[in-house]
Length: 131
Image (cartoon, rainbow, N blue to C red; front, side):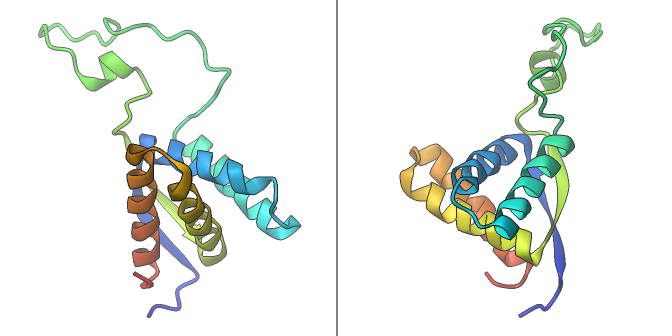
């Protein structure tokens, strides 16, 4: 078992959305310290994946400037490709808050989101050697 204080792992844009949703459910009932950790993780993920409800107008799928006639993910999704991946670093306390929130989230979600939540929860636990 690892005693590391932080760990890194890969997360897709879609997974980040699920994590933020799970954390939103926990945020209302969390203690001050835990609530602050939850808010910090939400803010970190929003910044990493450029989640911004005030983003400007998207240019549309033909804005990629690709003359080959094929559309790539960026031309379809703009900057919102659900498969875009970032390396995320969490402290042990943040990871515990996230894995607890994801475990609760799994119980009340559709099969697809529950599976995503479970997958991310297991990867986070494994990154700390708890899996």
